[in-house]
Length: 238
Image (cartoon, rainbow, N blue to C red; front, side, top):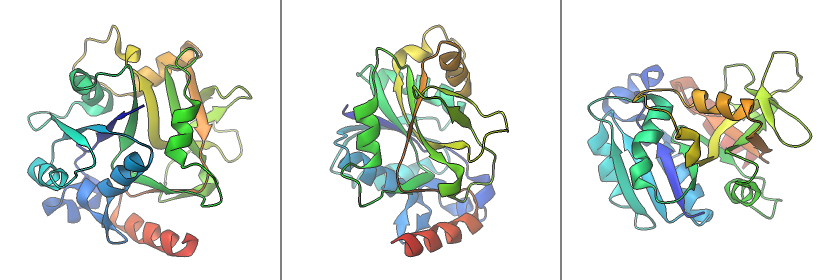
């Protein structure tokens, strides 16, 4: 798997005033832009081509990407209109030649467990089986997250299939902002703007939404306070 898309078009409203002048993907955590964490993970996993959508302060993101010599980068331009998570991916499909591709979010990252032989992204790629799966999500127990303020997202069965969290399981799973998608999940969708949750629910109904539990710790940065939490976690975990 050599292609990835990075969702980098968000407004970052909860991180104002930082995001008034700096796009959220370029906000720094521990001296490194959030976007760079995704780029580093993609490089380590052998990704060669990137498609990245842009909207808020898009010129800054594009200029940052000009210095990335490790990838063939294509910009999916959403300057005129944000298309939501699903619409943004569907809009970028003409730039993606592969049937299966990695999806990354520019505001989440993780710290691999150095005792493991394989990085989390490489492990996710190795687990994907298109004959059984339409979507494979990297998941993490809520107890191993930093900066997450919501409830659980999923529960997982013994086969690795995911269902929506109903509020009763202990230590529910969180969507870690990384997934592998097969492009067929967008078949039959004509709407220009829609949430990727629409595709997740369809995959669940067909028994084709799977999860893979990551090792290490997961960090999300959605607020200014979460930056400090993430930096403290990086120093604590090393």
